[in-house]
Image (cartoon, rainbow, N blue to C red):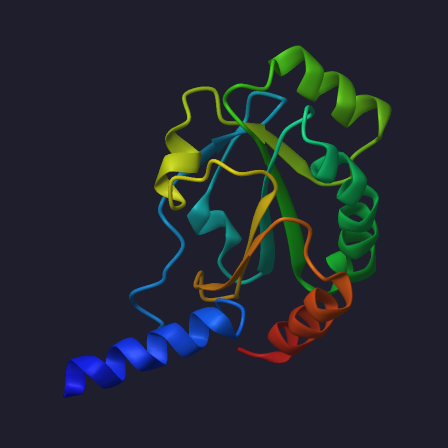
Length: 164
C-alpha cells in the first residue's frame, strides 16, 4: 500500500509541473562545464546561488526565441544571487555557439557540451530547450522542457532567493 501512495504522490508532483521536493535524491549532478573562454565551472560552483542551467542549441527555434527572456531574467536577478549557465548541445558547431554568444552579447556564462556527457548526466537531455532551476543548496527544484512560463519562473526565483 505504501508503494501505491509514493507512486501517487510522485505522479501528482509530475502533473503539477515536475517540482522536485526531495533534498538528497535530486541534487544537481556533479558535472564540469567547459566555458567558451576555455575555463571550467562545476556544479559545486553553483552552490550558494539560485541558478538556471539551460540546455540549448543555435538550431533550436524555441531556444533562440526564449533567449531574450533568459537575458532579461538574468539581468533582473543577477545582483541578488542568481546565475544562468547556457549549455550548448554536443551537436551544435562550436563556431555557431561562439558567434551567437558574441553577436547577442550574452551576459551569462556559456558552455559547450562537446561530448554530450553533461547532457547525459543531467537526465539524458535530448530535447531543447531543457532548463533546470537549482536552489542555493544545489538541488534541482524544477525542470522545464520547452520555453518556461517566465512569470512562473520569476515567482519561483524570487521565492528561492530569500531561502537559505
